[in-house]
Length: 397
Ligand SMILES: *Cc1c(COP(=O)(O)O)cnc(C)c1O
Image 1 (cartoon, rainbow, N blue to C red):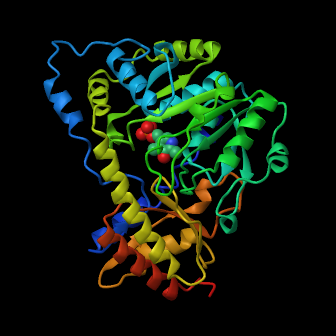
Image 2: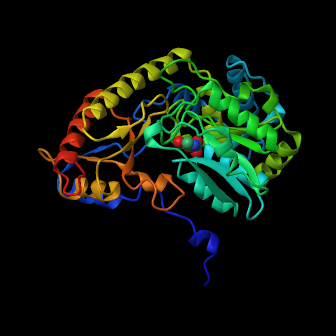
Image 3: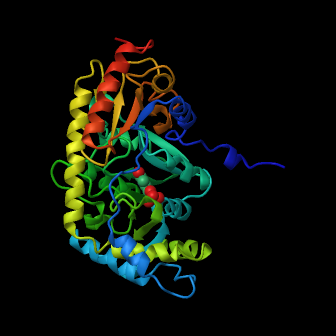
């Protein structure tokens, strides 16, 4: 049997790649602090369970392809609070933000078309692009510059006749960067100049720790070019619900989303009821969560500052920080921590950075850390990490 080049060309998740080493370490009785995966430990808003318990229909039937009307209404209301107005016809409910990203790629790209990203970037973007036979073109950003965007002329060098979209995460995964007004204005200018799409992945919108957040949804001039990707996964700590949405004010794009929605019949019916209830979660829930993550952000930043030779951006949003370690190879370092290192039976797991880059050889000495542990555990993990850097045979200092 022949397997497709498309499937063979896909990569395994850099976040899950080292899982067998972690399993082996745990079997030996080691305690592993997981900084590698972005699964929040925050309790899901109880509104979700309440709504699911009340679900009492006789048949779990197919729903509307576009999505549950109540959920779409709830999302409209949510956006109004951000000063963004969407009509019902602009919003398509998807199987998580992941399917929203797939629909964006499928609607925009033919084989060989290009999607511009800023590297390091969310590794699954490569998977979504490859599914659509599209190509990722990566604009480099550097740890030393805090992973900020290069100037407009530099970005334009990566644009050509096959470029269909700019795809970005704001706040950023894996970098924790929140783009400035200037950076956003520059992106808007480029998008208009070349008349390409902007796929704005804003699933971490509420997770900003310094200052306020501006959504690309507020850019009037981008209305016809913007594809908004959103999800309840991170906002309400409901990753397993698999409910997201793709939003556009471009009529022609919406017609394509509708066909794709019809092709997969509908998004999960029961979970959509739960998700609609999530949007009734009081603002105080999100404020509490934000406060907790801010504490964690401060804890991890303080811990990282104490490790000599380490370069990191000040994490400003989401719950990640990308770090450049003074080591030969962050993947080897990560494996060594699981296999050969411990302090009183405890160690740390990190996500090697190379998987967040498209350019071969890049990010070899970098890693992504997710601060999804409570502050006490984070402090311990940082102390372990500092000790590991000191003892690692491939250290550069
Ligand atoms: C988690 C995540 C998503 C979407 O996840 P879903 O669970 O499919 O909604 C999308 N983009 C980024 C950058 C993420 O970190």
